[in-house]
Every structure is written in C-alpha cells, then in structure tokens.
Image 1 (cartoon, rainbow, N blue to C red):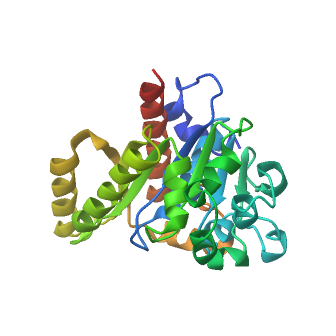
Image 2 (image 1 turned 90 degrees about the vertical axis):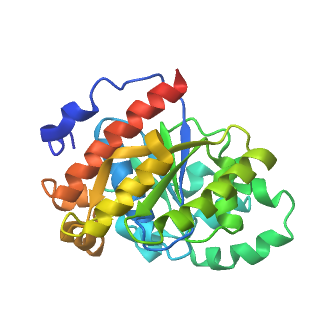
Length: 276
C-alpha cells in the first residue's frame, strides 16, 4: 500500500497526531455531486498514510459498499442494524481490499429506515449512540444519502464535522445555502460542537467557463471554508466503481487520484488546526 502512494506520500507527511477518532459526515442534499466518490477515495488516501479509517454507508443505494467491492452476500449486517441497536461497529464493519480501511455497508433494510425512525425513541441520536464510543479508528467517514431527511440528520448529529462536496454547476450555491441552514439548525438543536470541515468543488471542467465562474462565486461567498483542491471531471474516476476499486487503486496517476491525495492532505492539515 505504501508503495502505491509513494509518488505523493510527501503531500501527507508531517500530519501525525495522537489517536482520537474524528467523525466526518460527507453531506449534500443534491445527488450526483461526488459524496460517495469522495468518501471512498478520501478514505483510501487516509488509509495509505497509516490512518485507520471506517466508512459508514448510510445511503440505501449502497454505492460506497459497491465501490469498495463489498458484495451483496457480505451485507447481511450493516448501517441499518447499527442504528437500530441490532449490531455493533465491531459486528458490522467489513474489511476492504485496502489495508486500514473498513466499511459498515448499506443493507436492503436501510431503504425503510426513514419511515421507521419517525416513531423511534431518540430518533435523531441513533447513529451517535451507536458510534459514540468508537476508538479503533482515526477517522469515521459517513456517506450520507442525497436528502436532508432523518438519516442525514443522524449523521450530522453524530459527526464532529461536515465535509460538503459541491458540483461546479449553476445552482450550486442555491443548494449549498439550504444545507448550511440545516447545519446551523442541527448545531443549535442537537450538536453544538458541529463544524464545517470544508467545501470541496467537484466535477470541475477547465474547458468550461462555467466551472471557473461557479468556483469564483463559491470562494467569494465562503472564503477559506473552500478547499484549495478541486476534483476534476475525469473518466478514470467514473470507471473505477465498476471495477470495485477506489480510483487511487484503479489508476494512481490520473488527475482524479492526484486530486484526492491533495484533498486528503488538506483535510489532515485542517484537522490538525481544529484539534489545536
């Protein structure tokens, strides 16, 4: 694993810190903005520098599980069972092909979880209660569904910070303002310690002036909350999930892989500042 990432390992150097599990929700109510791709590849990049990482697949579509080559037969226990007290982290986490990276997969039961949670006691705190004592990992990355429902609310209540993938498209800021309002409401009502880790611009196309316009607009509104790293449109990123691999394993040298390595470096630096 170390050899695979040797060309860019220096980008992630100097970031060692004492073991303290940090929980990051990767959220945006819009679909197709790169949440799952970011969860998979950020987790892989962090694992490559010896961080222990757990991805929790909280989306009923199960794309994070598929992208990490977790077959249906391996998904008998997952995030649904974890939230409803039928399993523990230890009993639901499945090791992946990447050393140091595990995933709590999505199961078919998760599709009905939104309805079941409505009448469940402590419905907003189910995930936090299930993972509050986790100590076996440096980072827990929660891949949220494309909606601001009870599953995403559980992720935001459980998390220390939120990472927001934002597609470079015309309506990006409109959707982002809605999400920011939701985050602020969660902070006031349920999780006052919740922070915005950062906003990452995804699907950036340098051939398209609109991408530059959106990026400039987002940076002018959010300033330093926006990561320097942008994730480009890249065919290798799109191909990788069909092979059950993160793009960093599928094609280490492509532009998408290099971007996610840079993003991981930024995340680690921000985490170090937040912990200071």
